[in-house]
View 1 (spheres, rainbow, N blue to C red):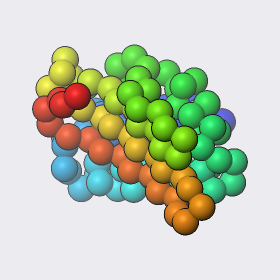
View 2 (cartoon, rainbow, N blue to C red):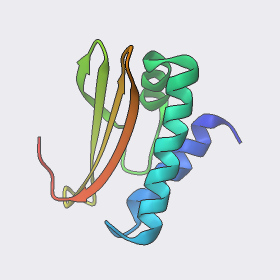
View 3 (cartoon, rainbow, N blue to C red):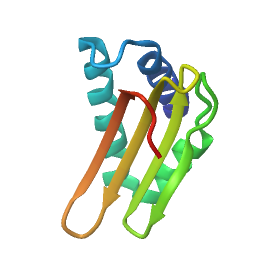
View 4 (cartoon, rainbow, N blue to C red):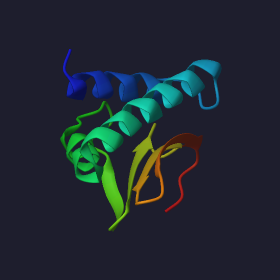
Length: 107
């Protein structure tokens, strides 16, 4: 299974689950770990390319914030009742990935 299809499957499974469920938490951790591996090995642009190419169940993730060391993507799920937000940071001091699946949508 390719990296792209594996991530698409994981994101689809996450957005189908109830927010804050145990399974959702495990999937969020798995996604964060996978993104961190790509970020560490290949950099911020590799993560950006992966998420831009990703075709998930409810459409594409929208890049909502792009700064030299940080990117943030967002997608509304379940007709706007839930939100998937991904933040990736890489600078000289640290690397971080955060996948957040929550109720309600904020800009």
